[in-house]
Image (cartoon, rainbow, N blue to C red; front, top):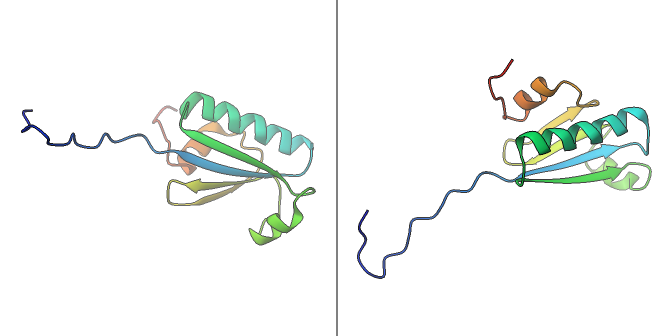
Length: 107
């Protein structure tokens, strides 16, 4: 499309950056599984457009209390909106994709 000299280019829409915070309880089995499953999901579906923060509730209990974390592992999807809170090992990939708004339609 022709633009007069000096006209700015329309902004390029970038895919949303997903920000996650995963609360875990040290190296318990469910926490280890949740970390592995979240990283695998992000590699497969959000390559280059995700940030993951892992918070150990034993090391930072005040933070967990401030966010009302009562069980681990608990995943918080912070961005993009709407925020989500998911509890468990994140083993069901298809359900997790749906809950995060990433449903690919693949059964």
